[in-house]
Length: 137
Ligand SMILES: [Fe+2]
Image 1 (cartoon, rainbow, N blue to C red):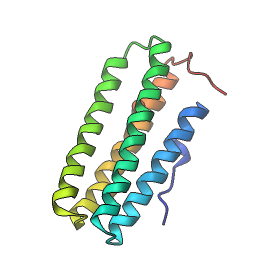
Image 2: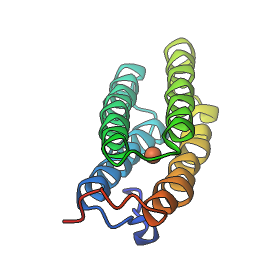
Image 3: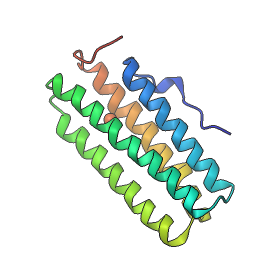
Image 4: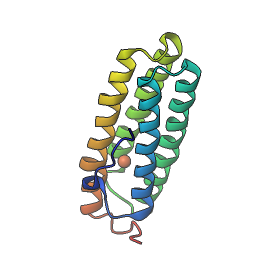
């Protein structure tokens, strides 16, 4: 079952909203594969597929914030960095232990909740609080 993208998470910038949807699509595929006990190689591939997109997406978001001379960019960037680190720890665990039940729980809970909370609390709030230079298309 694909992971639902909650419309509450829309921030009103089409480019970023489309990227957030793609993040959830890739996360859903990873969750599904690890839940249905697919091979370690396949799950690693899907985690890397997600991780690569996360890095590109964060860079795109930070570029938009830079062009808007957004004052809280440092804190926002630190949140992004923390998430990338967590994904890297998960990748190491996955490579050494395979897609264990604990891995499924972490992806389904911690990773999913982090993304939802970050988008809702940080991305959406910052958009409201003056990311006016973000192109609304
Ligand atoms: Fe963000």
